[in-house]
Length: 461
Image 1 (cartoon, one colour):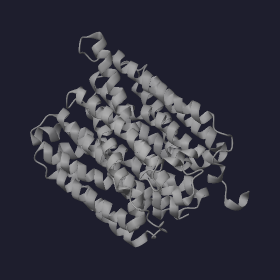
Image 2 (cartoon, one colour; image 1 turned 180 degrees about the vertical axis):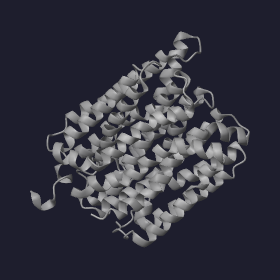
Image 3 (cartoon, helix red, strand yellow; image 1 turned 180 degrees about the horizontal axis):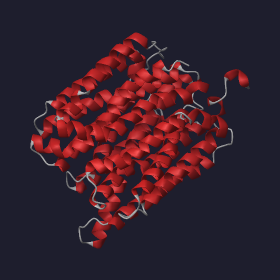
Image 4 (cartoon, one colour; image 1 turned 90 degrees about the horizontal axis):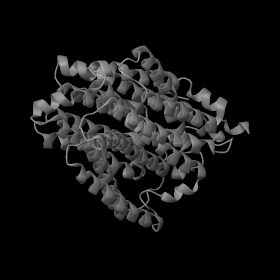
């Protein structure tokens, strides 16, 4: 199988993931420069999430309507425009709008990249292709914190965003040169009512859960937005089940493997979504590490993740999807629970080696689950399956941060002293680890040969 397609598509994921991790290390500097405080600047992170939540649902329709290759190139250009706008922002409002534009580009890049890959790759080669697609996406978060710290310290924070321009131009040229135009499905009529309902529901939900966990505004705003978002979401569900061509076709949940991949995957992401928020915070606030030191520790998880990409195909062929998904989610959940026992006296070498090991299995899960979503789905529904998995992924990751932040807030309130203690972090890790473990129990219920067609060549059975 040609590796050139997944690697070209991965330039987009590299830009996106690098950007997401780099900005976190530089929030304080950017805030000072544009005259606001770092907590308010978290709204810029939320704006990006909200844009993803609104525009991911129409990505598969856009790919069918205008061609995946064209949409992918335009998305990269929009992302670059957003990046330049971030670099020239001189106020909080300008920065939030620029991040929203970036999110619009990002919302089209990742789902369309996956859709192109699913349509251009025979099913039995999909695990391998998906592993190659995600490698550069994983290098982004590894390089992000140290690289962002370096650029911010020695040049200026503006370079964090300007660096996307040459990467994006290279991506656009490579896509035009090497990417085949995949077969398009006849575009269905776009469900405008569904777009408005789903977009509003997702935006309110992503905004609400972020505000609850990142106190840039009073948390009550977050609670109200989340509740209204869930209410509009319920209205959307009724609409989708009674519409011939809904924006997100919830009828796909009748397929058992697809349902398991989404529902069990959501429990996993909820637990996992909280750790990148909680763990660096604990290392910095409780263990007294600098942002650069904590970045050098957390980067170990991504190292394990990269190693896993070279074994993913073999693991799923040898163990099958049921066992591989159960083992990888189980070990990842234990990895989060173990964080609830760390103290400032814990050996850093031990923490790093556990992170490398759990990072390996964590990554194995990501590769496998992004393929398993398509186990019992026809090619004609692949776009819908892809979009539903991307949207639930974004929303549950945002919820994970909200749950993690919520546990910290709640334990402070219960004690009534307003101090963050080590025990608060331990409680949060136990809770999100337990949520993560639910996914293991769900995958254990799959039939033994679930997804076997994704690892066997067509003529082999």
